[in-house]
Length: 392
Image 1 (spheres, rainbow, N blue to C red):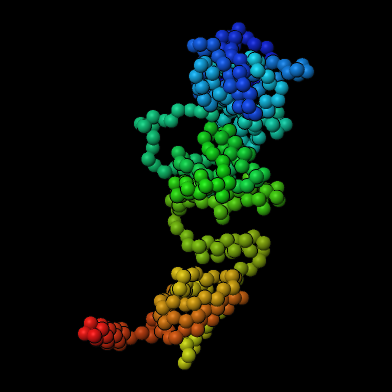
Image 2 (tube, rainbow, N blue to C red; image 1 turned 135 degrees about the vertical axis):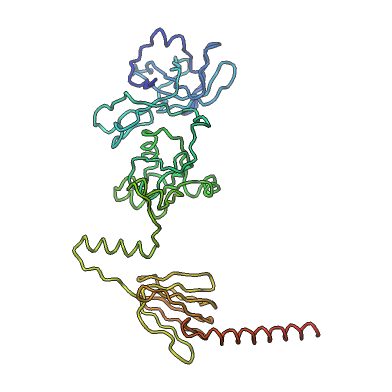
């Protein structure tokens, strides 16, 4: 059954009189309503206040029952302004939750919280509706297979898709479009969700339990781009090759590394603009106090620092960092080479990388037999040192 009370006139039918209550108290958007014994509405039922204010203007306010107070009273929250309401005004229990139009007819339209179009594009086909509160599906109806919950919002479905039946977080400051995005999803699928800011402690403690987060950007909203979804800050556990590829192409996908993704994007962008694509490179120089170990162009490196490994691609932000004892990986002519570094210092900037280390050896220059003998000598010296400490 569809409940859309605001389209009715101020009159009250005989059926409505059987479910009639009266306003007992008004506190801002919160109404306490008294009903006759045996006529109490259920929680989430829609209530409608109809009548006229003190100057004769018609009033039509829809509320939703949130709490049973006892003594034949309920507490409800108004879906619009409560200006003009007074104690004693008649309230109709509609006998069901609010329902809104769903399906293809809602795509590209803007609705208010009652499911009424507010975009001045005419009426919407309301033959297919759904209540905003529905019972959870039975256990036998649940499916363990991971599937994407299609919202119809392209940036969400492609770059940070929602898991069907999962938990979603929608984050953003005031005025960036949380309400529009939230109700745009709800109007099509009637999903329950809660809206917070990133700094609120409640969502901060739930990050680890969310299946997807959608972050709305003030910068995009300021440019008039809606929905203002920031795809780089948004995340999704469904962003897996086999899931996304099968949904959008019908065939299994494969994992593509970040570097390859960036190169493919740059190549496609430049080809679309009629430019010849040339892959950028880095100038890498590895020095020790006695010699130059490496001095040529490379495509990418992975460097071990005292704070962990960092990957460096062309146009990396300028940094200076201490180099840890470890392995330097170099992508040279589409092959990965390795080099052992004995600690030092690195400077990165303007696609130039200079690494000063105590010692360095290319993997191709290391003699396995000599390395084994050196290791045995080092272990023997270590045992002698430990024996001396024990005797002392």
